[in-house]
Length: 203
Image (spheres, rainbow, N blue to C red):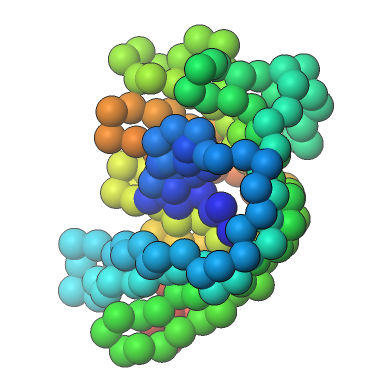
């Protein structure tokens, strides 16, 4: 899935490019992905004796991303807004299977994901000096990956998160995009969450 790897890799172009975050930009829209994607490597429990790297890749995907008009209602009480030319409000629907492998032990988890998620952008960045700010909203089952910048921002906000979580329900994450890519600034969930780093560590 075009997960937010607020390592990540957002679909912004992927906004992740935003985290991979916002990937940098704006994800290609109106397409369906069916082939496996290259692996992304990240670290669980960084800077601790328990640290280990994890490879994440998409095993299969049947997702479609479509730009949506400004003013389109989004779950959670939000409204779509674009910040052209680089950041366009969009929705992704469909399902995928993601693979997560502990590179130390070889233990792998296949995570079946599905539902819809949206990206909307603020008319003007809410944080001085960044390229854009916005909101990511997800319903259904997803995995969210957080890189060092996201982890630091969430810890500073009093809502620390592990490097990767499996969530279901209504997820809302506010994010910013700077020259390094996107990162999450706040995280809230009405649903359930599992610490995937703990699962991969065998805890």
